[in-house]
Image 1 (cartoon, rainbow, N blue to C red):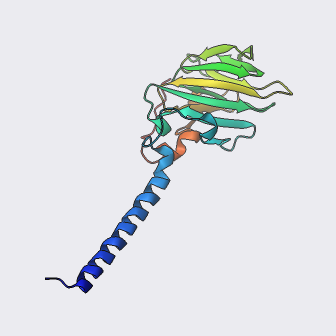
Image 2 (spheres, one colour):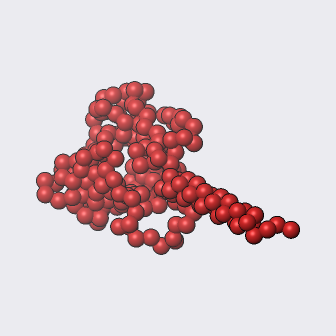
Image 3 (cartoon, rainbow, N blue to C red):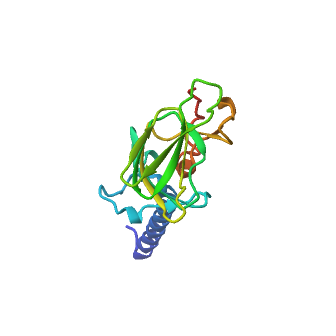
Length: 202
């Protein structure tokens, strides 16, 4: 029969192992929690979701519902705010995109020339509060806040997440020279190590 000293020693060892186990679990979930849907409430406060500019001055991006953060498979929803004089790069992606303008005004530039060698001169459209528009698959486009005084805030819905973005230096850059950015800035933490290279669908 074990004496009290052996039982006490065994209990201390079990307690130490339990503390070590909890520390390991806590550390691993702290790193993964940004990209884990486990424990996320069904109803979330947008102001409590991660927000960042991802190195792009004038941008505020929130992934409201995303592939990496929330396990979405068919659509992804973003809330983006652009300060006056800021906007997106010229880019295209192999998914559909819908914008709802919540406030502000801006200019949409779009070149529906995905069958040519380069985007070419874009058409320009004024966008404004309560307007909506969609971007077809692989059409090069850019949204720019041309208002000098007010932020542009848009709700963006994309299909087929995570988004694979091809970025252009200008409207005459060949499609084949556009630089692939995948995973995109707000998806990097979740996808960097586990998604194979994206293929251009043009």
